[in-house]
Structure formats: C-alpha cells, structure tokens
Image 1: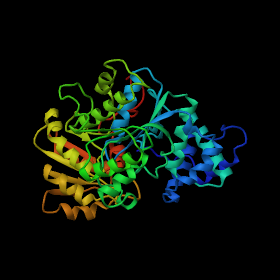
Image 2: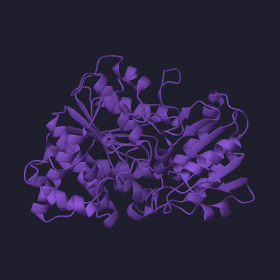
Image 3: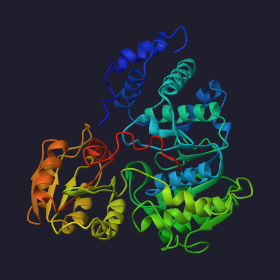
Image 4: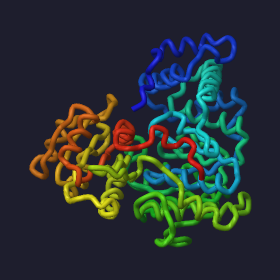
Length: 445
C-alpha cells in the first residue's frame, strides 16, 4: 500500500504550504499528500456545502468551466463512471473523470483522457486550494479539497465534459456543485447509514439530491422504495427519467465485455443509456460505446489473476456488494479452472457490518483467513473469528501480507483465493496478488 505520509509530517507540510512565496518550487508531491492525509486524520467529516462557497469564489468557480455527468449510487457508480469516461474518450472528446477512493495512487482520482493528473498539478492545485481556504477562513476535508483540485484540473485541461462520481450520498456531497447535464443513480442499498439514514427511502432521498430541474436522470436496477422516492423528487424538478427495466434493459449477453460479473451488464446498460440520452450534445459514432465497454478497465473489482493458486481481488465493502460478489463468484472461479479448495481472505473497516458480510461469504469457502486492514479504522480480526467459528476452519493473521501467505498455503497450487472486504485490503495486496504497479497508467481505450 502506498505510504502517503513519507517525507514530512502533516504539520510541517501545512507550514510549507503556508510559507509558499514563489510558486510551488519548495513543495513536493509527497509532502502535499501527507498534508492532505493529515487533514483527514485530524478532522471528522463536515457536510455543509455552504462552506465551499467562499473557496469556490476565490478559485473563480472552476466547477462552472465544464458540463458534468454526475454519478451516484451505493455500488456500481465507479464502474459506470469509468465506462462513461471510456466511451467519451474513445469518441474523441477530451473527457475528465473524478472518482474515489483510489486504489494505489492519489493520481488515479483525477484523469483526463488516458492521462492521470501529474504530480506537479497535484502540488499546484493543492497549494491553490489551501490559499483559497486560508483567505476565506474555511477548513475543508480531504475529500472536499481533492474535489476542488479535480475541478481546477478539468478547467486547466479544458475538458469537453467530465464524469464526476459522488463521494458519499449526493445531496450534501462536495461534488454536488457541478453543472450537470445528466444525473445517474446506479444502485441504492444499505451503506453509510450513520450519514444517509437507515431506510432505503432515506438513502434514496440523499442520492436523489443530485437531481436538477430539467436535467435528465438515468437509474439502474433499484428497489421499489427507491423508485417511488426518485419518482417523487424528479417529478418535483420536472426531470426526464430513463429507468432500467422500463425504458432500457441489460447489456446483451453475447456482447464482448471486459469487466466480470452479471451486475456489470446493468452498469453497462446504464452507461450506454446515458450516452444515448446525451447524443444530441455529445454525439458518438456508431459502435464507439460497444468498443469502449469491451475494453474498459476498473482494477480491483472482480479482477482475476491466474496463478498457483489463482487469486480474485474484489473491493466489495458492504453487504450489497458482497451479495453481488457471491452471485458472480461461481462463474468467475469456473472460468479460472481452479480446483475445489477455496480460501477467503477477508479484512474490513470496523464501522462496516462485517459480520453480515462474512455470513454471506463464508459458506462459499473451505477455509477463512481474517486479516486487519492497514488503517486505524480496521475491524478486529480476532473478534471476527468468533463469528466464523464452527462454520469453517479459520485463521487470524497479524497483517494483510501474512494473511495472503496463509491463504496461499491453505489453498495450494490448484486452489483459489478471494481477497475482499475493503478497498484498503485490496490496495495493500493488489500488486502481491499479481496486479500492475500502475494499473491505470497508459491504457489505450
């Protein structure tokens, strides 16, 4: 896992950023990231969007420099955003993409075409946002600052449009200042209930907060309660609505695809429907969407690595995503041609319903290895072992790396390992499982 805090403490980084007198020459990429991460460690999340106003004023409103496709959803929003970005990039547009969290590098969050934001731009944009914060007397969170950095980069690169993924919820998310041309809601399920509410209706209301007057809405396969809620809200705004299952169906089963899992057929259909909806403003040549969706990559999501044993890495981090993983796994493992012994390597955040996640996963495996996630917010794998006891043989590792070593021994060369539970676990083990060190770099679309 990348060491973001290398090079300087966050306090020293803050002093460097404050002392800046001539450009950003004295700053480095490493100290900038350490400062950003220090902000997230020191402060809790604050969702009042009004706080962004004075900072956006100081930055001359970069969010108004480009039209945006705004993508929300409990799960699938990152995949769908990547698909939309791939389609418009393949169609010759200068398309931006903002997603979170990243897998291996902060630079993955902000892209234009096939380019990740360069380190120099990260430093410059962070310094500019900090200057604006200081002048406005406002303190922003890591995510809010990263979001403004993305807007600055999209303005600097003069993008034709940007695909912007919501961080959490939608109504109060920092991204909800973009000038959207479409609002996309991929799915609605239970996650982040402490912030979004403990019912599907409440969660749907928060995610539908990205809907704007007369701006079209595209939704994926949603539960009935969510459909009713979105119907009411989009009706209030008189927003046109394309709904999966009523106005369009799943992606054809015989089409060539690059992302594994039946659920990706829904995501592909949502992305394709969005491009059709916007064809008048952003036309794409026939076949462009199909070619783009056949090659798009979204690393760390049901990603398979052949080996002895084979490894599947999936960043499922909530019960709905785990259910999707369980549905997809039999076909994925069959395609890998692995033997019968299957080992689950699981690590999760402590504030996630990890017991429920394990209850769905464990029956599919012969053995379980529990490992901590490399963050103070990690669950305690020793406590989690009690939930597995009596169901499957279970081992507790002191680290994710040790967990992978244990899982490999237990699976044997003919078996398979599934690494899941958190994107932080996926990130820490991604390269060791066979992934590229720079999975998003120099990928032609």
